[in-house]
Length: 534
Image (cartoon, rainbow, N blue to C red; front, side):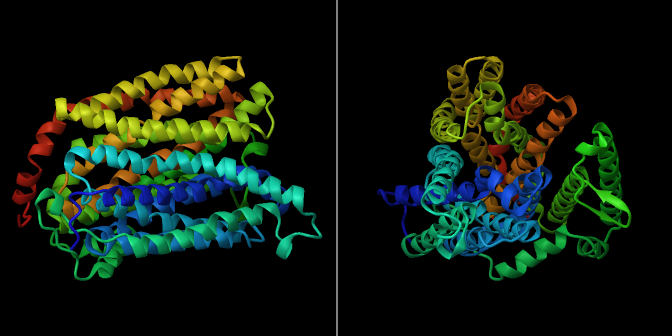
């Protein structure tokens, strides 16, 4: 096995993984810049665009991240990332040949599934390339790929469409492809080459060696993946629980299933009732029942909630050590707090360009300005969060959380300035500051979650962490802001509404900071007490 304790090779690996993560968000965010073209050529509605951008992607990304995390914990992590990157890049390229909403939606689901494989394996890989005291910085550099990808999707996507439209007519287009189709291909094909580069140049390090804890791979990792799927989705989840010695787990699972369905029905009725009939975005009709955007939204959230709870319940029964380390209040507070931070950033992101158009009268050229601001400020913010978090950790075990609390508080003031100014220049400046501060949480919280588990559990811990950021953040953020805008008719108020979750977010991080030092120090002891052979 490779010794990765010294040299610059580890930084090459980090840089390559960051680029791959940028492609993750490049392919994820492409719908934003292509929306006008998709509406014109495929006849998509705003509701359908919203489903393509947020809920459907978030659901499959989050849920498939759980079983695929078993590959990160037990199989070859470099191969896992390479295969996942190849799959989602291929699906992005295939999106360019879509002729209707169903075909494009299927391709987008494929993108979500492929992307779900990357981060659990990348997080686990970086733990074995960098020592504990540098991990927040490493994860922050890796996470800076988020905003590099988001910015590049606006800048490069707009450039491809502009070039295509100015150099070709409908009669002279290569292969008859429209600008939006060429953009999907231009974004997807390079990812296939990047996957090959990763496979050929990155070596698999010894699992757990950096921490002095020997980690063993899973002798049957794909069987473990299938087991995780069965633990999540009904009726297999219920059949598995029915085989347990006690009936209590099955009863609790069925009760949760009924409660979640009831909550979804009430949420559909409530949100549909808030909107006039012409703004409910009907998609189709099933058995005489109109399927609206709200129906799809809350069914997706219900599926995500049930599958997540069912999986966590199964972990409690079959892997007590992992359950002991990720099923405690401290880990939960970090994951939910991170999800609420994502709620704010994802809630704002789809509407920034629209707000600038409505408020300042900007044109398409604003996409370049917004892209550069998001890329530079977001990238620097993720790195700064990791660097300052690691320095604060040397002063106090919970120092990373104190950095996050300070950054989240300051971001609120910058957001208010951004949404209340009448100057476009100040809006851009405040957006950069808001974005810089709002993303500083990612490296410190991700590293803190990793510090609470043993090496073999890192992939599972990452999957749980991403449940919060994707189901709460991407699954709810854009939808809630859009719904409030539809109901109130005030986009500014809707975007400012993300501040409503700030008190809860700060309370979770403050409470977590009090228990984190003891939970981190006792991780090995608690795992051993739960049956871990260490």
